[in-house]
Picture 1 (spheres, rainbow, N blue to C red):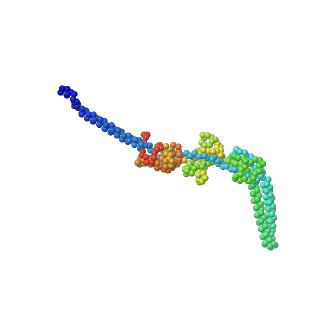
Picture 2: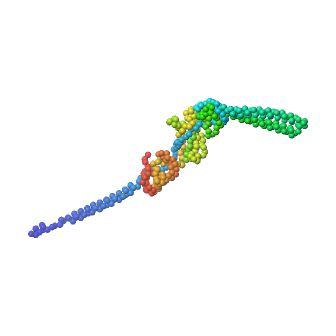
Picture 3: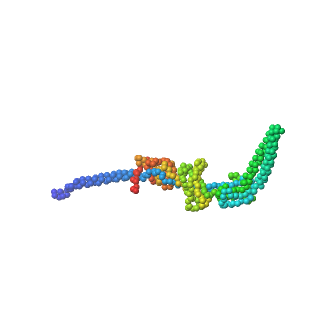
Length: 387
């Protein structure tokens, strides 16, 4: 029975405690390892998240403006000389010799005016002159006779002086009559309307039998003669470029009549003053037109090559930021924090803009800045791209 009791009695395994301790240790190690791993992973996640929150940007330096700039402006083509011709005497147009498009020489008669009233006034003036000459001759003879009699004391000195004075007055009257005749003769010369210079008749605003009266600026001229051998090109340059245009020696221009053909003109002069109404400077160029291809009145597109402004700084247009307060750029400060700088654009050249104010040549400007960028944000600078 004792043996049976030993068999039925529970006996504790000899190494159970050791196995339990080992299992507990392994469990504890696994638990600690998992917790530490999760803590490290969370820390790495926080570090990586913070690092990814700092944007990496590419910085560029403003460059000096060295490229010449083209300025395209509308221009007016005018004849080198343009003479509106008016009548200087009254009458009727007797005949005209040249029509529009006719080439004329200086002094060539364009038309003749019949002036019956002027002719009559000239005839009367000539008659008055003849009368004055006759009176002068008689008074001269009388004065000489009285002077001879005064020498023999046959007449008084007063009577002799009176005759001398009458002779002097008669000579003055003759001079006045001659001047009157000369004036009418000069007016007779205006009966022939002549060309003032070599050129082309561009307008004829009268016809045979038309009543002619002396004209004045503002009235319709009888004829217009243009010298087209050379042309004047007038361009209104904005005030901002007025100083630069003075260094321009030539310009190129096109007209609608000749698509694709480029003409050249040389600088002649400027008006020397800014028009207060338009804020522009009037610039004149001269173009040779010996071939007669161009015509006064053409509308021209004039291209001026202006020198680069050495003081201006250029940036690619990709560096610009459009803010509510206006145009700006983002600069990276010494501590790699963002500074938003408002700027003023001088010239927009497309892919490149010239900055008039707001940046310095040593500034580090962010190219393609994110829209979310704000002042004080920290950024990382991307290494320069290998060339």
